[in-house]
Length: 336
Length: 130
Image (cartoon, rainbow over the protein chains, first blue to last red):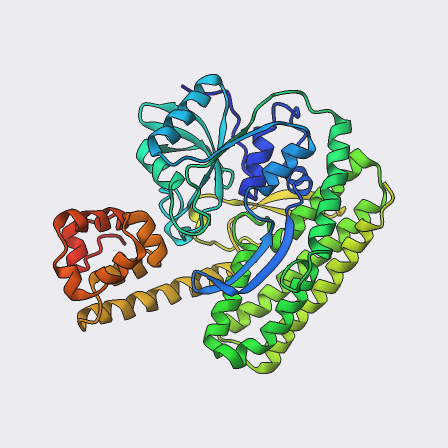
């Protein structure tokens, strides 16, 4: 059994899966950047009390699952999403959907994901892929970060669908229920609502751990990391920041470039001439995140390490916070 | 667009977004960037240190081999409890060498499955992967 499904490689797994699952309905119009932007994917969050892989819990994107959910909501597409207690039920439900002709998105953990290079296998449970068929004991997999389709045996797929630890997927799968055609007008409205949601997410979440103020807060904290943890551990922490910012799935520059691409594409639907200008600010922000990453690498590779270097690192983030604040304020003030 | 060979570059190239000379966003394929492969190296060096420390603890009789495999598989007690089906307090108990020695083969098999190793290798801290 093999569904008619075209594999497409993308930068970010959830946006890529969303874009691919909506390909038929949207006649190819919901690209990865549009899915990311409509789903209000851009974020920043640092929670000092929680540790991930023995390092700081930092995210550059919104919570897992939200991009698919918001994008489908904004486009009026009903979504089926299901978790399972039983592995047998999780598999038979999947097979039934495939028989009905639905390619299905699955949340998986990457630790036991056999085709991933070992260096990338951490206990990260919010990866997404699409199952589009089954031949003998092998499921046909479209993993958005891979350049070609791949396969997993039924045991391997079960293992990653039931990965354990934080954000355990519990066999979670999802797909758009209907294949109704998405109109340009719907896309236009969805873009505007996505931008508004993202503005709120970056400017209006109270407290100092999230959004633009989270970036500023992290910048201030970093200046103390050297005294607090010592150069080596502080270096490891910065390495974790850079991984979250640049690793596969981000499209580079902590998702800021994807967002820049979204705003450019959004102009075609909204005919708003401010968007390309604001897009440029996100390009600058992405570039500055990368400059900061190069500086961080100097620290974790042992070339830099003075308090002055940590101050500089913190200042980069404070500068980025200012830049992104201006960008989102400009988006907020648009009269649609 | 950086093209330094990273770990993923051996398997697949990754999609990145960048602006072309006219300022328009396009996607390009990158095989990696040495700044971020450096960050990944740091993460794995930390893991290696933890594994080495765990191994020494097991050899010194301060912990059972579970600790070694837990660090080797990047797990914490919560994750190991999830994969093995034991409760967290049971895992904590089984981390003690004396308790571990008395575990039945059936229980050891659960841990072996969680770590993707054989029971014999579990007891002897043997790793067959490169």
